[in-house]
Image 1 (cartoon, one colour):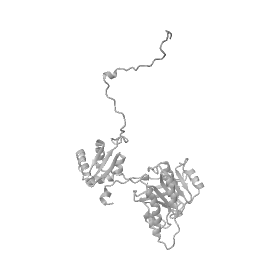
Image 2 (image 1 turned 180 degrees about the vertical axis):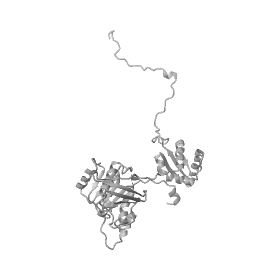
Image 3 (image 1 turned 180 degrees about the horizontal axis):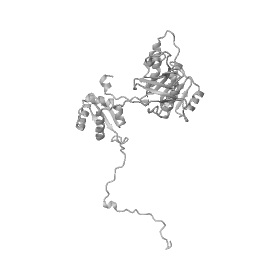
Image 4 (image 1 turned 90 degrees about the vertical axis):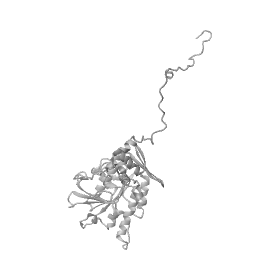
Length: 363
């Protein structure tokens, strides 16, 4: 794809399972052994299955698969008893699986065929699904290949996959360097979440969140021993996404015209007349592509039509829940015209006799 086409082609917005925190793709949740990673992973799975918030982050309700490969069903049940009164049927568990490259990918694909609404898969732990390799193999290449095999599934189905993993014992100024294995693990993943305690005996920890598609942040958590939940100790500071002023102007313009079809140059001219503001066509088109998600939320749809002579597009405002000129029903009866005076007069249809005619004077 050439750069010009890429800049002017609308892409599907990134799908978040936990808004602003866990998008589609492959992610690592790493922490020291017995720090509480599995409690955290189970709770996130439960919240996603219910469609309930994770520390104030909205979730997209979906089917969830949790591979608890270090646990038994009895232990999972015991943990569910502690953190919830009712568990949904769209949260699924498995305690055994094949390894990466030896059947795991097929098992996941088969599950997804049966459960098409799956949005989140958690594998606890990564080490349980790694295949045994030769000592002569390149460790970095092996780590990267394992991560990439699972990432391909996540990308193909536009779901989030979280791999629970361990940290090294040795400390490092960069927490990502503490992820067990080579840098191929963190490098191959889309995001990494590092759960760290200053002291093992403490109930507080910091969750470092960093990735390609999320804002880097540090969440300060406390483990409640009564509810067995990691609770947020400090408010979350979120960066407000700024929408360019021309997008607001475009939204107002579309509400007035409903449909626009033409080139970026023609749209810039129309906006100049509408709002007395001048924009370069290329810049205008770029801003439309950049803020496509905002436009869709404001019921403005985009479609592209290209020919050898023109590169034009259509913007359509659907302010009536689908009842635009394009979607309006065409088989509705037309309204009746004003009746004439003659038509107002009642018409009495002849009725058939209710009884036989009189015969011989007898009724």
